[in-house]
Image (cartoon, rainbow, N blue to C red; front, side, top):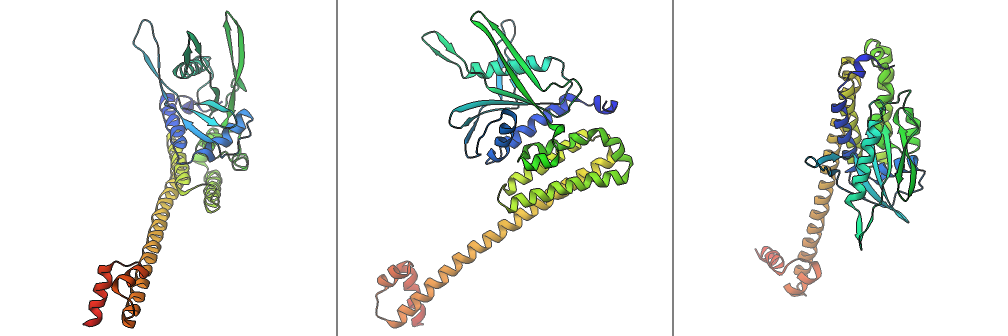
Length: 332
């Protein structure tokens, strides 16, 4: 069992953080490299990563007969435009399975379906999304899947809702399968060991070595062009946020691993600024070099005296006024 102090952790605060994490990861400029491998893993799809992904609002209002409409906020829902467009709904959970999660999930799904439902000649057509749950903590009661059984006058509909148990994925699994979206949640696989890491310097050093490996692998993926600098920065930042939240009671873990991620974030930002400065300098240098070449060519043509100012301007790409100014300098 998890330590009592962890079990008493503010679940609502963690759920709020996780929701922000998923939204942040989904908002990355080209999130396909993060989202698609997870979809392939959960649903057994074979997307290439080149498919268009379109995200939809996370806020949905549930219709209530005897009270004001109640807002429900999902973690993320989107459509992948493969050979056949498919809608997906992904939720993150960290609490003990209690049945309420399944009810809440179905409410989300039903509202997503209704929001995009179509009525033609009094016929309502609704399409339920392909739904999955990312369980950040795995308990003995955590199932491999949830199940919907919908009994209607027209027949009974049954289907499964798959569950991804994040704690069961090793670093080799994550990087080998391209499941980079799971990196911010990797710390959950070490949560049971927090008391030991906090009191045993050697154990903490081993944990820090794992996170150093994560940073080095992310650097390698950036150099290879698999991910961009902003992608890497977002993964590192969100990883630090999760560590800060779930290791609140363990100061040495916070300082050891949390500070490592903060330092990597600062280094990434500094490197980005440096690279931008270098690129800007090269751009300015090229521009200045082109300008100087045009000027030297115009001066040589003016010295020969065989072309008019207008012809020199046309040949060099300078304006007539600029050529006239150069001509004036030659006569001084």
